[in-house]
Amino acid sequence: MKRYLRRSLLPTILCLSAATFGCDEEKKAAKPDEDEATDAAIKVELPPSPNFEEGKVDERYPDGAWSVYGLRKNIDENIKAGEAGTEIEVVGYIQDIYAAPACEEEPCPPGKQPHVWITDHPEEQGKKRAMMVVSYAFTIPEYDVKRWKDVPNVVLNKGQKYTFKGRFKRFSDQGFADDRGLLEFIAYKDINPKTEQVEWIYPPGAAWHPLELARQEEDQRKLIEAAGKAAAAQRGG
Image 1 (cartoon, helix red, strand yellow):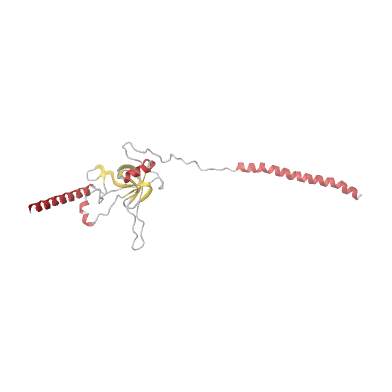
Image 2 (tube, rainbow, N blue to C red; image 1 turned 90 degrees about the vertical axis):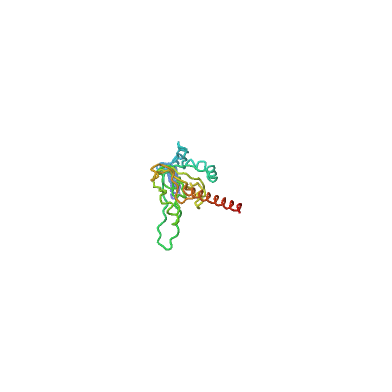
């Protein structure tokens, strides 16, 4: 009898085992579909493609003045010209004006020389597309203040559009440097308060200011005149 029960139960156990194994296989087979449904429910949001036209303007304006974008498009060629002394005109908006940081110690560390950043668009943020304009302000010694008293100063306002004259370089004579290029200031167009006309305004005290150039020419003329008189006196003696 016991032998009969063992024989009868053995097929049943095998069937149950097979059924259990079959259930596991069904679960495993169903899992990939569930995973696919879960993955489909996850939304992957990629960042937008960069807009390479963003910030792009004409290389030059109708009057021939450059844009910041235009100068940097052919940067090596334009810097080579600037370092050779070529003067150009550039139109830009004042994005930022350097201000020396507040000092709470003595002696105060020296600040940087005055400089500004210009951009092609008034709403441009950050310095990615901004360009430095340097060497637009000079310290005038006390003994020479009187000579510059009535000469208009360079006054630049944040957010305002200006036309600048200068030389496009990587390294300025005053120690500024930028691999993307900077403008070494010569003059800018503004209203002369004395004449009430729009004209080129040069920084007082600059070696290239027309007033300073006139002084140098006068000094040179006097030296030549003195040398001529000395030579004449020697001949007469």
